[in-house]
Length: 96
View 1 (cartoon, helix red, strand yellow):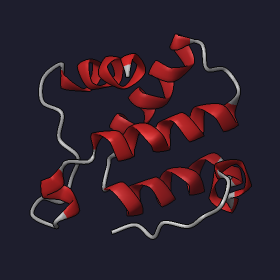
View 2 (view 1 turned 180 degrees about the horizontal axis):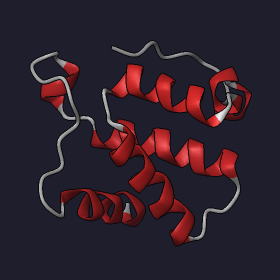
View 3 (view 1 turned 90 degrees about the vertical axis):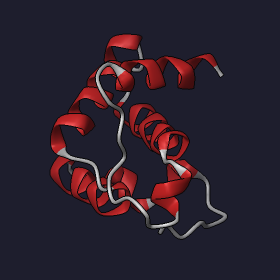
């Protein structure tokens, strides 16, 4: 699914893409829709992660955290959260 590299996150080129291209990269890697992406980004902003680079790093870490074994195995295409599940998963991510 995703290629892991031994590079510092801050140095990864895709973190510095314009907003639309960064979303498209995330969509390609994690199969999430724009609404879920925007909700996650806004949640981190409201949580107090104001700097865009830090927010993107946290967003990617969250997507890795939220990716199910079924999705990694290719059995399901999209990250699924269910009703109220996205906020709950974000809270779990922050609490860890």
